[in-house]
Image (cartoon, rainbow, N blue to C red; front, side, top):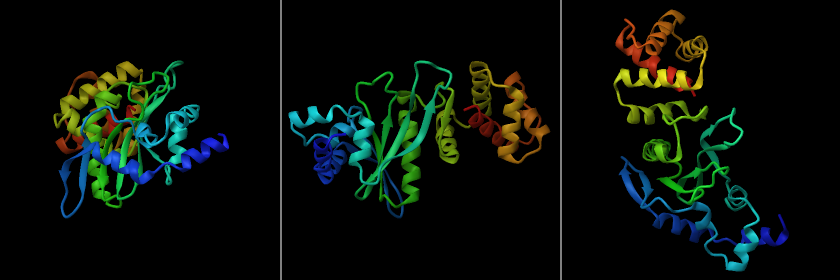
Length: 251
């Protein structure tokens, strides 16, 4: 990166960018005793375009030699973090995608990290926000709302892929909103994942036993039953727990 580009990026008015981001958001939930979950007013606000909005055409042309990710890395004072990371390791044409977050002022913001092998119309799209930025409960509530609102748009589980990595408790909360409470839906999702991804059933059973701390026999009865379309005769609470952990392990 040239000195000129570095100087241009350092001149970006982050306070102005924050106000532009906030104007693109609406309150989705108010939390007690304090906090808010926010979602976008529309689906075409690019975080990177908002950050670069104050540059002239000539300055923007100079910055265009950078990737969107490089712009974020250089402009955001605290950097950004992956929240859900997806990829297809066996594919020769698919890259990595998911969503990330960054903090700016009193809020934290979620944004799409697209697969740039298939560039979207609105790269690094604004997905939502939480406030105050230090409130863990607000972050978690917003995380789940963002996932539920966008999973079928930005291709997160339960849409197909080979690998998806994120905070398991939050992914589970989001997936319960998407798949519902019916154990049959989770069993069907496991069955589909095993068929599509050619998973070794023994590995899935072993991983799930490790995650749950339950005996291999109980886990095998539930997981094998899900794959074969037969409900295992185990207590309902154990079956529910095993099915959900097993589904997370298919990713």
